Length: 606
Image (cartoon, rainbow, N blue to C red; front, side):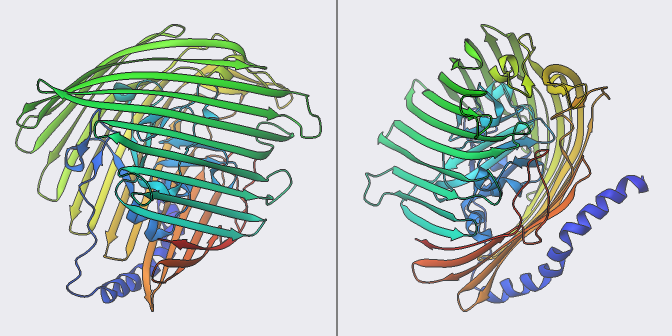
């Protein structure tokens, strides 16, 4: 037991020593800066739409849920969705470069395709490859909050959510915000979002763009996009988004100086109507994705691929309040995905599902959520995903929760059909399946929040890319059954204009030993720890420091430290930021180096 605890103690101590050293003076400064009549900053009873089929308040959430709020993003100076998720315990963004140019998300050790990514509840997971799942068409300026629900969610959302779900939620209400930033390596960035000012009521427009010449050879990037979301009438919401990315991809998929261009276009409409005690929601969305990949920038046409992927989805849900806090939701979800590709060929599949969920208080302090979903695919057969979870309010401050559920993932077109000088797909792959159990406790008193969540997940027929020797091609295969065990913990203290947060996540992945080299299953973080401090310094100055320590399964151990100093003017903030301030040499995807110390400066207008 002592030997088991030592890595945990070392990991926590290494990353949080500076946070502990700073926490006491930060707390004192924050307490002094706030007048006695100024109450601590309280987290509103946020409406959560990720862990259930229909919105619920935080009091009724029975799953391990982390919410990064608008106030958190502003306080700790985060301008990237990927950087915000890096500070969530149990989430491992495996970036291939800054600004989320291409990032794989892992939750609780799940592989990059075993997690569901949503924006305002709209599925972003890509049927071509899970490497595109991190293309989130939104800027931080337009975000209200980011919800991360750990654990299986196929009962609510269908395929892919074995490790967990990420949902990026847009801002509402009247606001205007914009920022411009520049720094090393020719970096320039701009983003802005406006709602209710110069636009019809309940409409929001967000735009963003960034570029860099690259911190090393063939690692340049340029990306940008826009999102328009609004309500042309009270019962109808329209959402249209487009994003384009171009980036040097040296070593991303093999030993070659590659280049990649992607385009994402997304459109959605949601209509809501109440009739005979039921609330009916009809939702439809379509997604088009282009992926242009050049294996070698010096050899146009050689192993050069053009992929065009389309997805459509139509969903109808009906919710009825049964009284005394009880609620029933039923519905159906149908759609299809298809690809037209110079490499993968032309393929498609359709799918349909039926689902039901009940929220049921079984005692004055306990609420149970139970659901089941049946999915059928034209190509991959069918699957049934049940789940049940419960939350008990032991006291007004303490909640206990537990859940168990099943989830599945179907293979991507790349895993089935792809071929290039380093990789070869397998057409007869099976779907992955997994069961997960977890528990936890949440203690909230005033401005203090403490959370603890242990879990265990069993995955079958996990797809990985393997090869016998470094000279062979990587081949996709249903190669293993994998068991993942771990826990996450966090402590947060908020003031009116300050924040201190410390977290830890530990993980063990038990996978059968293979006489093969493996690409993804063993690429996980064993220990993650760190935290954030944001504090006013007086004279309208403020500082924020973020520390993220990771000890990866491949033996890497590194500390990513970022800081931001801000001077608040009447309607503008002047800031200077630094990332990887310790100039760590590290990688999150094998063979893909990450930037060293990077300093930028800019201005935010509100």
